[in-house]
Image (cartoon, rainbow, N blue to C red; front, side, top):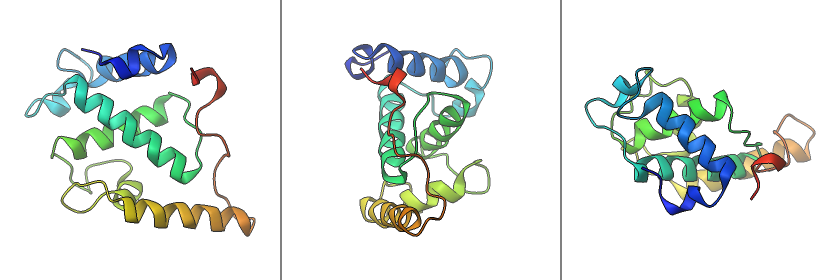
Length: 138
């Protein structure tokens, strides 16, 4: 099921597998979330890629943990066209990066990035300064 992008990085490959275990078509955990529109490797790759962009814009650290899995799940909901803002855990974040019809919005992402940078500059909370934790870098 994996595409080349995540086979080359063992830690990202583990995160990909983690998502498949939880949300893939054969998953007994939450595979039913995507029963009407099952996930494929491209969907998962795209969701991870978009979440990494969102982490970078927000200056947040990607750990490959439960929080990253949940955010990536919400991105997969959007990609598959089954996103409803009141049904996703992280809709406040998703609405900053995606249009109401589910398209990734680079302009909104740039605005959000500027907000994060301004919060850091003024000493308000703004997240970490690393995009990928060292253990996830290839």
